[in-house]
Amino acid sequence: MPTILYKLARFPNMNLTTMQDIAGCRVILPDQTAVFRMLRRIQQNSWDVRETYDYVTNPKGDGYRAVHVVVQRDRRLVEIQLRTTWQHEWARTVESLDLIHGHGLKEGGGPEVLRRLLERSAYAVEATSQGERMSEDFDREFQKLRAQAEPFLRRT
Amino acid sequence: VPVIHFLLVYDLDRRELVSQDAFDDAAEAAAAYAELEKRHRLDRGYEIVLVGADSIETIKKTHGQYFGEREPVNPYLVRASAS
Image 1 (cartoon, rainbow over the protein chains, first blue to last red):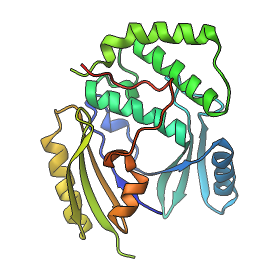
Image 2 (cartoon, chains in turn blue, green; image 1 turned 90 degrees about the horizontal axis):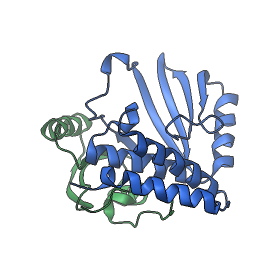
Image 3 (cartoon, rainbow over the protein chains, first blue to last red; image 1 turned 45 degrees about the vertical axis):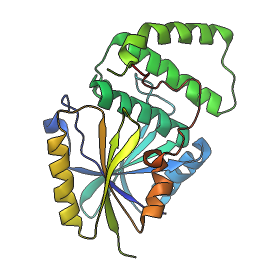
Image 4 (cartoon, each protein chain N blue to C red; image 1 turned 45 degrees about the horizontal axis):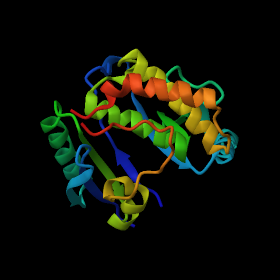
């Protein structure tokens, strides 16, 4: 069921001069096994793989998890983002928060407490999606952070 | 299968689709999209999406969130709260 998504970023903090001339596509897969299977298929294909960023083994500081592969096709760089459904869902929440509040979270901006909450959120969404249960300590800490970040989550 | 281009505007506050247009021509769709992005450049709370597929039914499956599909529930996902 292929779809093509065209999306311009509307974030004021985006620095256009640092963006490469790069095309992108995103694949949402049911789970992590499927993501790594797809990664292997890309690597074993005769595609010219330039870079692989494994943000699952090494999540970004804000909690972002995905695998990005940059390949060269027809003399053009294409970034393929591989995400599980839940990793995608988490990334969507960050995107909606940015669209509503303009914190520039995706570019490393926004209040520290909100960034910390989102990092913990990504960690817990990942763990629970794999069937783990979070500890009571974690839950207490998470609720505390959520309460502190509440003013930054409110729609105005 | 020819690609139809759908231009969607989603209101994040009201959580509903406020407009939906279909284009056969990619360039025309891209121009309409750029125009909308420009108009809403300083607005927050609108998501503007141009997405191509064989039919709107496909989009409803792949981008169900814009068509009133319930958001997946995980207690650790952080969503904006009502004011």
